[in-house]
Length: 183
Image 1: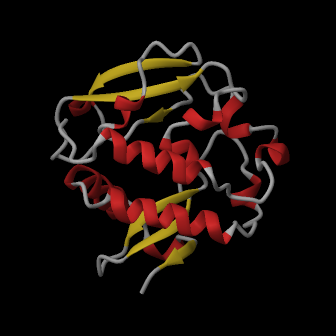
Image 2: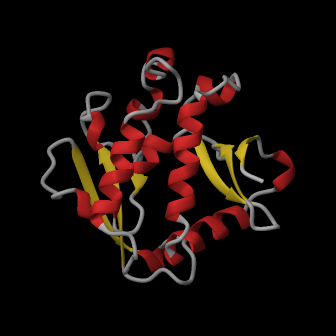
């Protein structure tokens, strides 16, 4: 898949999100890093198109799966390979190298029917309990703003926009917990 987002843009995004956290403290201390150390056999995340450029695929803390995107549930505009990574050294992975989906959690982007981008608490069932979601804990305003800024940039890429539009269309708007929106 060919993305319009360059490696240096992803590097800048990593730097921005590396300076903020959902809480002022390490949220992994609340739950024993449940999102990183789940015993679920297939636990991992997909990289966004082009994000794989930030890695050598020789990282000893990651296991890589490379799949044909057509074999999975992605937008019709997506073709070619998709990268799925499993953390092998959780929760001791190099925090500055965590993939974007790790940095965004527990927030997810959502496009409302009028096209407005909002951030919601992660809406899918998880194989672990996240206290940030379960207890609807207040998140750091700096973190929320940084994540929203990044998603506004990312959805300028047609492939990522299609993914967020596709994911948003699969959700029921009435049950979403909106965290942040820009009018």
